[in-house]
Length: 103
Image (tube, rainbow, N blue to C red; front, side):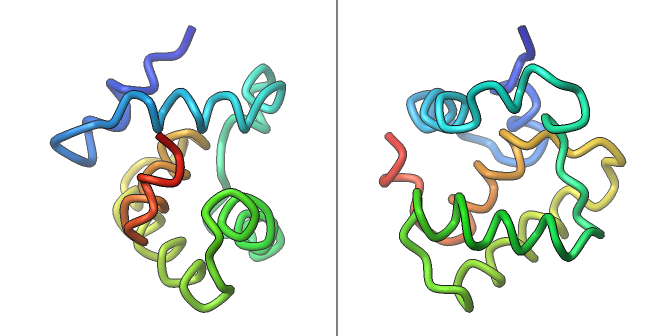
């Protein structure tokens, strides 16, 4: 099993483990395949899917707010070539102040 909390701690000091568990549950089977467990922050189609899926449906964000959060998460993880989907989603929620909607 992947250490999602440990990966998130590379980018933020405190980690809400209940929020991490909610993200893992939301992602479900997508985390079982290497390709779908990662986010391509340079693929506009994937970022649109994150905006219209996780950000809108789970976090309740409008498109503009979601795009700002996605950019913040991508910028924070810029140095990491393999961006964990769970970490990316967590940082998106953190950047938009919506972690409480997960835990």
